[in-house]
Length: 55
Image 1 (tube, rainbow, N blue to C red):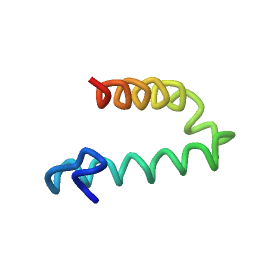
Image 2 (cartoon, rainbow, N blue to C red):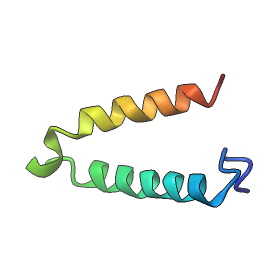
Image 3 (tube, rainbow, N blue to C red):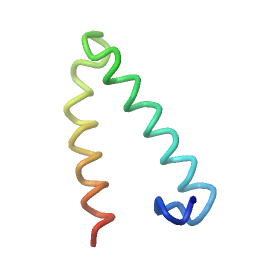
């Protein structure tokens, strides 16, 4: 399973899980002013990360 999602070691797997949890929280509570400035940057980062996996 971990290899299938691009996490061939524990460090990468922890990063992917953390990003998944953070992304869910940001989307669930997107109206929170704490997240307002960060959300667009997170989206850009995730698009770049997903694009990098296709190369």
